[in-house]
Length: 137
Image (cartoon, rainbow, N blue to C red; front, side, top):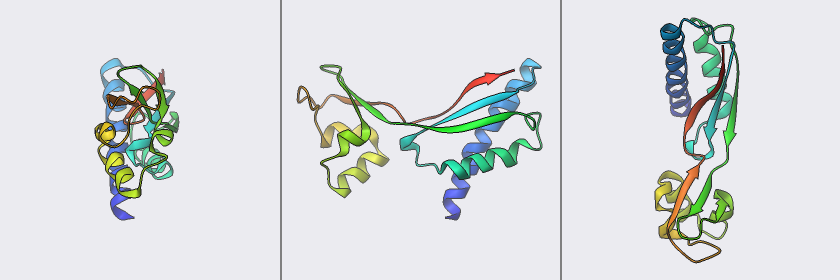
């Protein structure tokens, strides 16, 4: 449990630090922002939200309203351009394969192929990152 909390606090620190830098450089007051967390990031949303709430109290962001939400992961075929959800793509795999792909998503083409054309030219195109979006000043 504690290693998860530590991870969320590190990510929260990065989010807050980037926004504090923005405030410092722009001279603007941030009223609200949205943090989008990729499904594959393995972050606990509640813990991350609480960490951000704790960290902004001592900054110029203390009055900002924010939300934290999950972005579903999706995969695109480089051959036929069909798109599938990460969960849809993982449906028939055993637990070991799912775990490998979860930790190293770029290996998805080693374990599955496109449901439409059979290609293994697959790429995870969403749900991997943590981003600050919709900053309102």
